[in-house]
Length: 169
Ligand code: FEO
Image 1 (tube, rainbow, N blue to C red):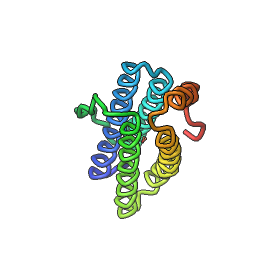
Image 2: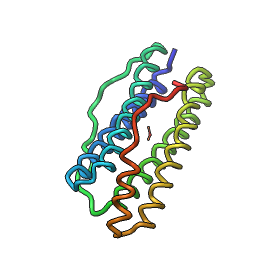
Image 3: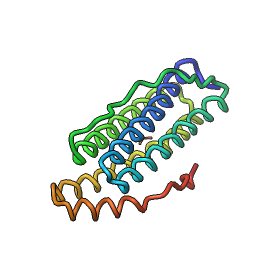
Image 4: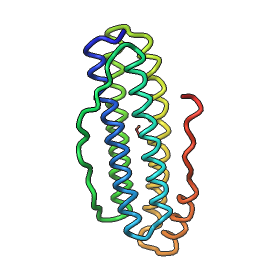
């Protein structure tokens, strides 16, 4: 059974995942407004992944004898200066999520809660992938700069992304 402290920490993690979904949905909306449908699709799928992460945590908390609380989710930024800024903010956000997952795992290990330890290891690996994929796209975005043809090519590439629930879940 989850301790009160870990229940609270996991709830904060779940809330951060819901916030992540909302943040990426906001970015998707901004790209739609900018007529960049491929980028909009990529962020919409990213939001779906974050919802998956949030629900995975929701189910874990309740399944482990805790109580997942659907507390308020803060409002994300809704307007952006450039494509590059969006991906810089995304990478910064993913690094923040990684650091919170790591801190949470440290707390879990202090309590020797092995089940929650195993649960969180999935997120540790997932964050490596998350950071790597965003970092690779940011590199391309910087390479392309203001070149319209390059932006359209990237838009086309990112638009092929589809949501597939992670197999390891
Ligand atoms: Fe669920 Fe992108 O962190």
